Image 1: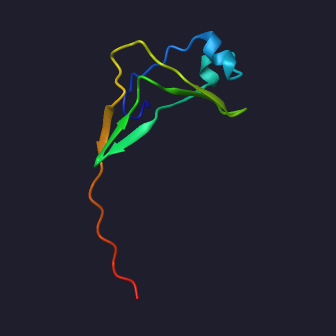
Image 2: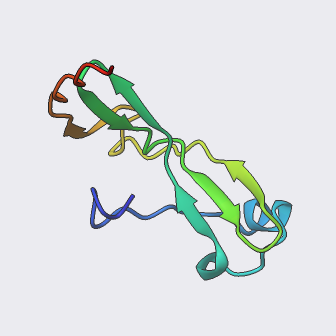
Length: 87
């Protein structure tokens, strides 16, 4: 998520970490779910995924911080060139 929002921080509670088998916030990997609507990609920054990459357990959090959106614009996709005909 920090590729798109440099100051993005997830306030993770110790209980949330322990449910995925972690004790330290720095050991967690954070992802956001990306959606595609037409040519626009958006990210759900209000519902990040916190993953323990060692045991592959994860949890989706729901942030109460309203500065983040469930549809944060990430990028527009360019139109792909049509595929050529095949024989």
